[in-house]
Image 1 (cartoon, rainbow, N blue to C red):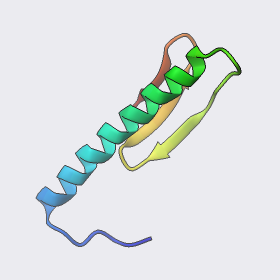
Image 2 (tube, one colour):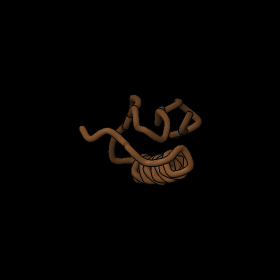
Image 3 (cartoon, one colour):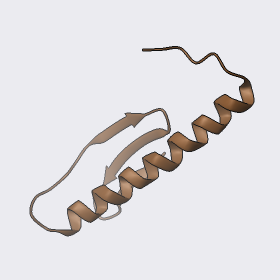
Image 4 (cartoon, helix red, strand yellow):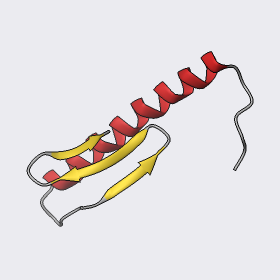
Amino acid sequence: MVMFTGSVDQFNERQEQARDLAEQVAALLDRIDALGVGVTTGRLPTPGGTIRHSPGEGWTVS
């Protein structure tokens, strides 16, 4: 893994981008669940937050 060496502002911007991408992943997982072909469960740690599956609520980022 490469360590980030930019400014604090650049780091914060990248954190925000990572969060946006994590939310897109959560939305895709909701769409996969909606297909009804199997159950997805668990959580995915990401730099943008942890993507978690909550039964009855779908996928969320925290």
